[in-house]
Length: 97
Image (cartoon, rainbow, N blue to C red; front, side, top):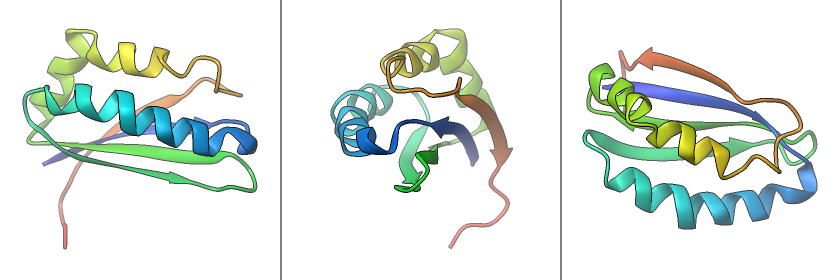
């Protein structure tokens, strides 16, 4: 399994709006992507810092949806939310419980 992390910095007063848009817009789109295995979003309500984590069957599936522009389209949906540009990182999941 492979995890893609998008490190976020948004205005704390927009976290609920962000979460709603993510749930209603990103999740349905993600479910249509090959290898999708779920998502989690973690936010600090005091600072607006957070991370969105999507899980993929393997690194190839995560990379494929960057090549087909899916990832970039999802990030663009939140352009007005970002206080700083999001940072993308990827990791192999070596343990899960």
